[in-house]
Length: 144
Length: 377
Image (cartoon, rainbow over all chains, first blue to last red; front, side, top):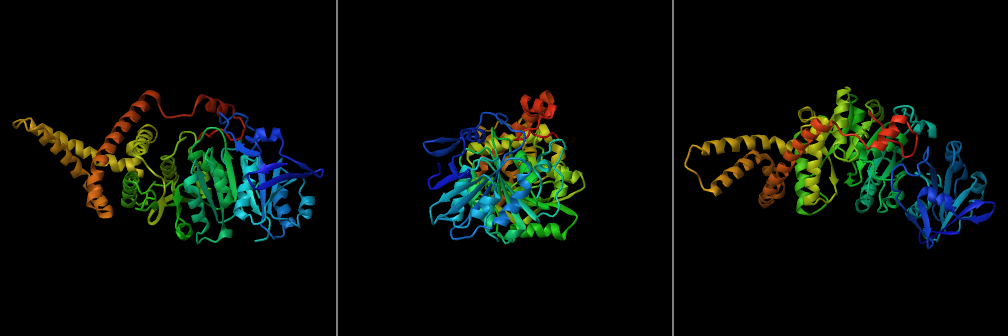
């Protein structure tokens, strides 16, 4: 388990275990874990550690007391997941009760749990601190 | 939804236009703009433009101040560029590659739009099909209250307001361009412009040259929040003037973008020098005047030729502001003149600017990496 900023707890839903973002992934994304907090390091050169294609992350924001629209999220992700590795982070406040369906539809879903009362904007910021992607897309987990 | 391949296939020179997208993509390029970014993005979010008709893409050019976290609070997509900063031209191009909008709006990380700015600029493109790029000029109220910021903002505003209309002045602060026109013109020149300020004028001139309509609106204005110091103003003037002389061509651009601040500075400098020379020559035929008289004559010549600028300062900020700005203005003019001469010498000795050897080598072999190697036009 790893602390997400000050308030959030991030875990990955794979093999039903609480998994932190691995050290290798952290190094690739330029994020290191120090004393439980995430810190960004700037590589010395624009091309050092460069990848062939940008790494993509999706952040699905689920405000407190909202029900996630699993179909909507899965539809949005379907085209992207076919094109290589995509990280998906569900950022939610409080105790979400409706994410089981999304967990089944999106493999390796990472869930960021923030305390009840955390605003949507704070959720986005917390999740961004954990997103390893070069291109991060932020989605609402609920229908507009 | 676009695929990764279509977005980042570096084998083709430019990304292909997308269909079925949004009317507008707002691209905010930022670098270490934490202090202003929240206000900038919040202003876009409260725009009168319906929220479901545009997307916000923030491209962070290797910031070290946590701008990305601020961007995440408001943006739909955040692009994180790593390594050393590549410049706003490069950052905006990366944003366009992801944009789904038929029209692309470029907003800088220190520019606050009014609620009606985006819809009214968009309306110009909708109502006038012959226009492909339209931008808002800066207003007279600089966000930073210090004297230097006020002076510099008014100087830029003076040029933009006097030479608004059809010109190559595609204002970098807030400008809209049809995506197809932008792509067909070759996008921003990220190869030559790795720092900000002149890349938008170069793009405007290229758009005009390709037959696209480009206008600068004096009615629609935006507020620039950047805080300027004496050093940063001199640095900016030096950079703009040098790039203008070395890469763009002074006389060609003076016709295409007469509102550029370098021309505002130098247009009055040439007659001032001529007038001063004439007076000094005349002084050779009369008994030697007192040194203070010579100084007075020189100052009078500079003030006389800069009269429109000083009148503008007096009308907007008052008489004493104009008096205080006069010596600063003369100094900035001298910096601009020296930088122009430096640019001409550099152009003749070394030629046009180009990226470092590593970038040139990577470009030569067509290396496909992220962040991509700057593309040559």
